[in-house]
Structure formats: C-alpha cells, structure tokens
Length: 65
Image (cartoon, rainbow, N blue to C red; front, top):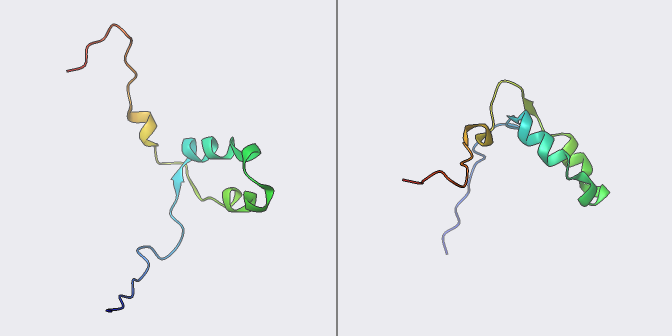
C-alpha cells in the first residue's frame, strides 16, 4: 500500500463572505454549545460577495431556457 502525504492547500483560515457567515451564525441555536466557538471564530471577508448574491430568483411565470 502506497502512503500519500497531503500538505494543506492553504496556510491559514480563509475568509468567508459576511452574508454567509451571518446565515451560519443564525443557526447557532441548533448547534450544541460545545461547537459554538468554531462558528464564532469564522473569519469574515467584508469585501467578498456570497454566491447567493449572484442568484436571480424567477417568478412562477418566467420561462427557463
């Protein structure tokens, strides 16, 4: 069996869009308290938009092409 050693892709934490962080933190009531610090320590990137900002919602009458 060949052993493959993988190195980390990033040296440290990667910032996440503020909207996404806010959404995740809004769910803390459903996360056991022992894990809260993990979510509290998320690094926020205030300059980055989340992918959700790029999605356009269609009305029921709109056609998909």
